[in-house]
Length: 279
Image 1 (cartoon, helix red, strand yellow):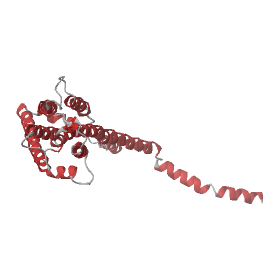
Image 2 (tube, helix red, strand yellow; image 1 turned 30 degrees about the vertical axis):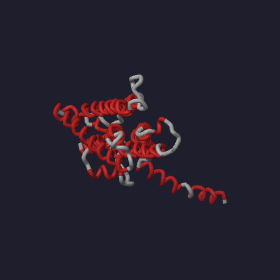
Image 3 (cartoon, one colour; image 1 turned 180 degrees about the vertical axis):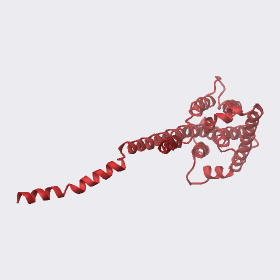
Image 4 (tube, helix red, strand yellow; image 1 turned 45 degrees about the vertical axis):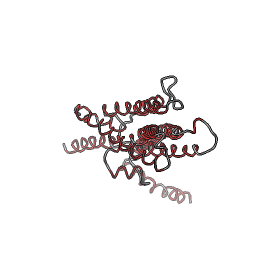
């Protein structure tokens, strides 16, 4: 009976090892697909004549509304990013808890937009003449850069510091947040250098370069994050599992290994005996 018990314990231990993969969460492509669709809808206005050149405040209001609706859907359904793997928590979540999450997301985004607005003003953005454009640009940039981190990292200060300000190794959610934040903010900052140039182009007016750079950076981040957080870890996990299965298949049992060693030790003495007989 004892050997049978040990074999059952070994078989029960094997699935646990298989469950512990290098990729700790289920791949979820919902954000990648919906994120690209909603970002495109927000960038290219569905209404003809509503563009950022003629009515920037209305255009940015529509863009911000589309992005906010996207985040509200994912937050209310609780399927954003890596939360999709926790199905038990999603099934037991109440309506009040879901609405509370949506409210927290909106308030946190507005707080981030306020900080970005202050940064715009400190770096010379017009306040007295184009205050509406500055406010709406700050909201859109916050939705593109900071809201993914709000939903992914939540209120964990250490995770925020490690994701956005540290070069240490990051978890997949932290890589997700850092990818969107830095790609959006750096590209938006880089496009701001086109405004002071004396080219007299329509797209150089405030806040077109800032918003255009933010959208471009967000789409780049969508591509980079998809590869970094989904494709590479999944491929690495499959590679490790394949290598482990190869080692398991090619591993020699101990009794066969001992027999092979004894055979190899006795093999050299055979030719010596034969040579003596020949002499």
